[in-house]
Image (cartoon, rainbow, N blue to C red):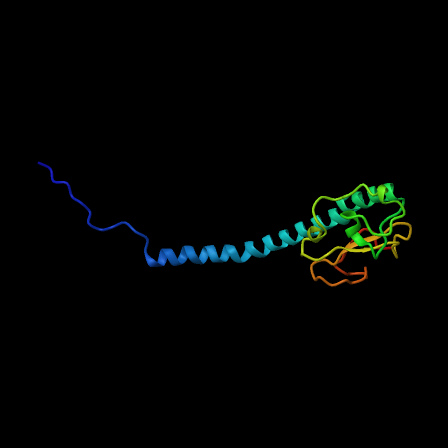
Length: 155
């Protein structure tokens, strides 16, 4: 009769192997995490650019407001006029809104700041200026080199 030998040693990873794998994973994470963060920032910039752009949802709401009322909301009425009829309209029946889905509180940029709005605009004098304060959350006034995302091009 043949005897079957059983290997009593357990098969497992040694401490050195586990530490080596953990080190390699940490090294990979050190390179991957900053790259992913840059991609997240790029995505947020893209979202804000689309929102304030001439074909974005805010611009379409403002254009629809102008078609119905005959003008853009002024600075004091702000973007809230897209959700609720501003007081003092000559003909309350002209307002056919809301012109954007949601609530004024939900109309925020990807960094959770309110969009800035001015009408008539300083740059777009015949319409409006619309911008996001960007990543730093500071209104740089459209200065060159600022991270503000705006609906006009620098000259």
